[in-house]
Image (cartoon, rainbow, N blue to C red):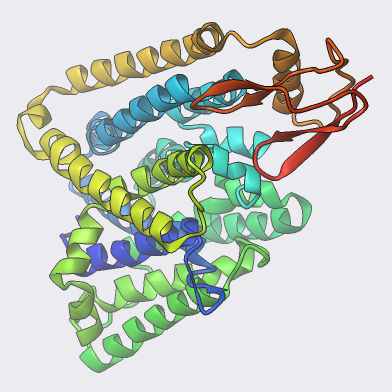
Amino acid sequence: MTKYRADIDGLRAIAVLAVVIYHLDAAAFDRRIFAGGFVGVDIFFVISGYLITGLIYGSIAEGRYSIVEFYVRRARRIFPALFFMFAVCAAFVLIFCLPNVTDQFKDSLIASTFFFSNIHFYLTADYFAPGAETQPLLHTWSLAVEEQFYIFFPLLLMLISRFSDKARKNWLVGITVASFAVSTWLLWTDPSGAFYLLQARAWELLIGALLAIGVFPAVRNVKLAETIVASGLTLIAVSVLFYSEHVLFPGPAALLPCIGAALIIHGGTHAIPVSTRLLAIPPMRFIGLISYSLYLWHWPINVIMKFAGFWYMWDTDARSFKLAALSLSFLAAAASWYFVERPFRRGTSSKAGNASVLLTSGGIMGALVLAAVMMTAISERVWSLPPDAKRILEVVNQGTNRVGTFKPVSSQPATMTLRCSTRRIASDCHRRSKTLLSSGTVRPRIWFPG
């Protein structure tokens, strides 16, 4: 069983800060600070594979592993903060956003609730495209990959537990190599699939698993451990600072952050070098402790604040905007960790029986799906848009550039300004003039009065 290591919380802090700052588009000296910050997710995968495999592998070896208990522990760890975030996002979208946005959110909410949002976004969204900024649940794709992995992986470990130690390790090494090969192949044939799908990402979690089962020889020499950990930090720094969305990813490029994370974990397993102690300093440990909640909340807050920036003409590239988004993300994460995560993991809520946890989780998931199904109808009743506006939104929702011809009702036709916070009528177009309809912020479509 894997013991608690403060330096791994420090590694979590590096991973989540890389992702958060990347999503804020923070820049200095006319250059994005963490242009490759998205590799923080890959670091999380390695950490998760190491910790969870250590838990499962040790329990199986001792003959006390329960797959039901494992899933209950996962539910207590993952569900409370996640479901609360879902509820807040759903309330925001329902109250402030137009029916077309609500309809998109509904589909992503259902997919995220059942942990197949990676497949949903694979079919509907490009992670690096500008349109991704309107998807509050886009970041749940990585949670979906993890949970899909942990549906199958415990069963695999139970199956190969009857084999010799060498055979078990060979099986896992073989599967890791196969997944990496799939990732590399998809990178050229289906880049979106390489990014989102489990079969192309499993090798990253399996690198952590290989560490946990002792595939690599132990490092007990402090100087050697120092070199290993420092090398790992260097690999992560290079990928975070010098990668960008233009790098073919994941595939071979993901080796840098994944091997970097693996070196840091492995170097600090038996020896305790200075680098490991630095990762364990209190500020890093705290950020690592709240890293799950920080990951959950930073992206929805970023999306919501960009909506607000549009409403109130707040420059979303301004430092004040990004500082506000970062501050709110940390406040929400700290509150979520203290008031939601901890009580369910350590307090009285954690004493609930397995059946109670599973039934409650299933009930909440059902309620979320029911709420999602009802959202579009409620939104349409709240907004009561005129027919022409509905036609426009239908076309926008289909993702097409064809709007069609909309004839003015008079020589002084009115246009409706479609915004999430207000609706107003403006007589700002005239006979034979061209009126621009902007869908989103950067994709105007031209309307020609007939």
